Length: 249
Image (cartoon, rainbow, N blue to C red; front, side, top):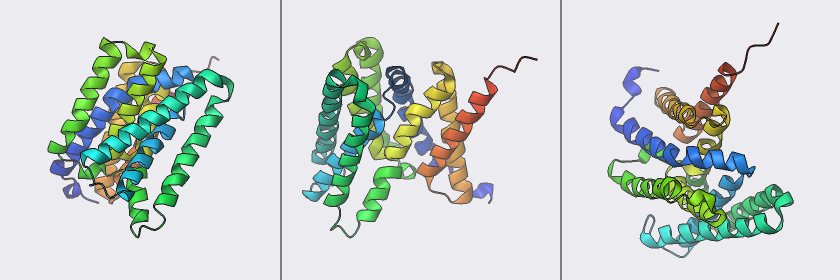
């Protein structure tokens, strides 16, 4: 373990990617908590991942526009399905979201079952490849982030149930290909949960968790995605404990 293992040229683009993810995921996560649909991000991220798997099975170029389109369409289809279920079965929505997640996940596993690189592809889908991020590769994520924030705060699409689900699908589709399913979930839920509705505090918690996880990954040669998730949980837990009122005597 030495500071020489920390390579700014590798870590800074990854950290920038994390900040772009947090820019949209903090307000979206607060809305998810308010609506009480905690696992919607896992389900939609898995739908987007299923779209990527289908595109790969069809021989589409990795990272090409057809694969991106397949991921967006799959995520939008999943979001529309969840919106319909919210309208028709609100009291069972969390259970149905879980069923949607496991169905999409198992469909992806079946489609990858004859792929000799299936294990590698599944790991990339779950924990992402954030350390492979380059400055040039951040442009698509940056454009999606700017568009979603403009629609969220400028057009106030969060007030529209269908608009919320559509923005959620687009955001998650862009993020899951950079940071993976697990980190999408952690970025949405942990900062918003630990900050108890204070958006500025949530951004600080999220940025600190990403920085801690990336640093730990570099120093101890750990998988970056998993290390960042643990970093977010650690920082979020400390922040939540620090904000608890002292017990009265």
